[in-house]
Length: 178
Length: 178
DNA sequence: ACCCACATGTAATGGGTTACATGATTTA
DNA sequence: TAAATCATGTAACCCATTACATGTGGGT
Image (cartoon, rainbow over the protein chains, first blue to last red):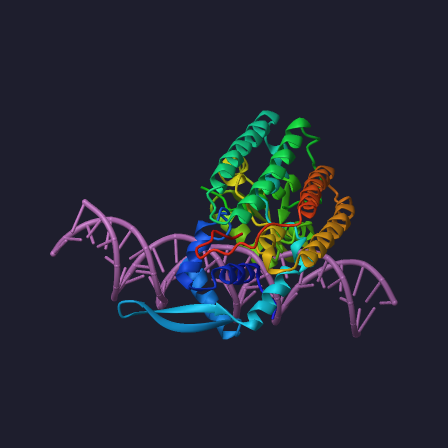
């Protein structure tokens, strides 16, 4: 009954689209600003079949083009319930997730302060570029969400740039990643 | 020559520890505040073998206890170079990664404003708990990093709580996850 | 002596990525 | 009409997770 994060996101996107083929859904994921899910066919097609077999989706075979078959999916009442459950899961929502910059900064005692500064500045610059790109989002709300997210990250980085860094942590049994 | 994020993090932790067995490394990952990498044996043991076969680690068979064998690993010069390369990769460091809360908020038009507020408040509460737990970190720098990260996130959530939310995005071909 | 927790792995499973195959539509 | 692109999948591979197996040392 519980959903993985990819399944939850897929149900959410599908709900927005109303009904869609696996291909259309995969395109949405591929177009997303995040690099985290590639939206590859090999991920989405089996995913949709799994969700359909769990009755969270209803599959209907429509021949969209010529005589070629395509199966379109729509969310069911059960699917909506599962999606709500995933959305409201505060336990999982408050996990730290994966943050490629944070993960690297854990080990920034292995580079020089100058290199650290260079890395942070480069990331800031790329965030700026991302923010302009994000404005192309068809969905204004998602664009706003990502934009505010990027703003907050930028100020975090600026804070990190302010304090030059602390001691090189060197412990036999250190707590670490990520 | 390029490292996955898990490989980079593993090399970083190993550098801190000086030299370690796969088991010790797996423990570090398992003890980490993030839920993202479980640090399961099935991930770490093959990982270390792969890195050793790429000459990024040097394996040495020492019998730690009784007559039972254990292989301990230490990073090589090549490994240090690869780690530096991964650390300084601004392109990947500036990716959006995976954020369980952000991913959910993309779909928050599917829940009521009251539910949204409840979710955000619960996440805030859990962040507070996490922040106190983080102080137990043996490594003060990692603790400080996570703590400032949590601070920034909290202020982002408070910003999201301030504006009640925008229009339900409803588009045929919406850009979306995550 | 026996049990339980720690230590060191291996095996089976699941699911995501890249690559491939093929049909349909648009474009040069 | 040939080439390029879009659409709809399938297959092989890689790797992380859960479970399992086994050895060792400490507690009772």
